[in-house]
Amino acid sequence: MSGRLRRCPRDMTYTLLPVCPACGGPTVPAHPARFSPSDSRGRYRRAARGWTI
Ligand SMILES: [Zn+2]
Image 1 (spheres, rainbow, N blue to C red):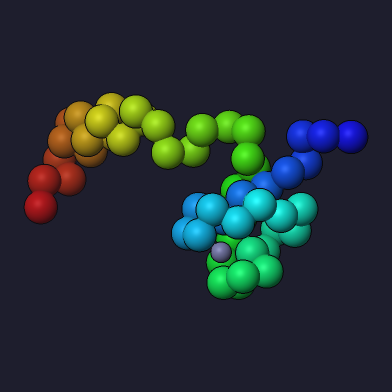
Image 2 (image 1 turned 180 degrees about the horizontal axis):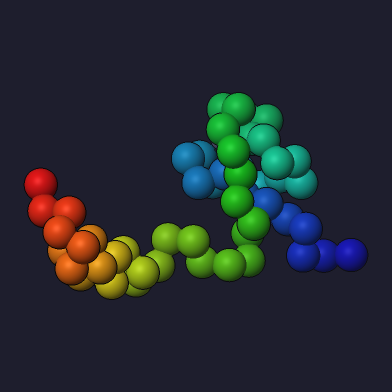
């Protein structure tokens, strides 16, 4: 079955393990876009909560 593929966000290594065999970091599912435009919305949300640093 396909769909269990995971990817390391650090070195783009594809693996089936929850931990990257190359760098030992946590992997994320390859299908959903974890790093997407949600960051721009997060800025407004943080600003609305008063997280201005
Ligand atoms: Zn890695």
